[in-house]
Length: 162
Image: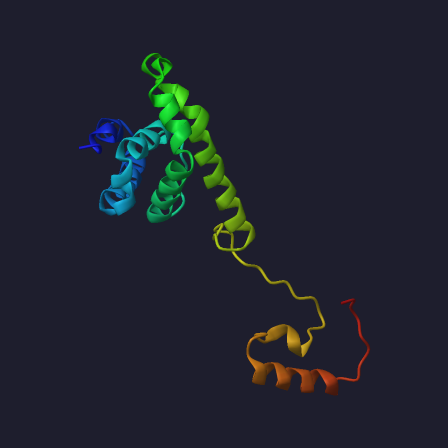
């Protein structure tokens, strides 16, 4: 029943946003924590549908939303039971913007930890003369050992800086 809070808003979104948040809503419907305060969960979701980033996993987004609602339950209730909310539904944004901030913070942290593929190709550059260790996988112990032996056998001048 509470899902109806977001149904109309989902239909008014662009297709990719609608599909993304449709998946989030599906997960929320199945999660038992949603039943504890469904009106707050769906009202919060409705408030951020148009501005929330859609680049994190749907399940992760839904869990962040649930954690947010649990943590800010009192503040959310205070706003939705205030008559100002009847005249200005955007007043909920004072609290829901904290969820958007946490999603962005988590995304930046994941990016800095290398968990997000930015799509840029990995480019390795080598300068001449090559060292034998330049061309082997660091994780392959046998190949690295063999390359170190070859490199140690080279007695010529070192022509490049490390």
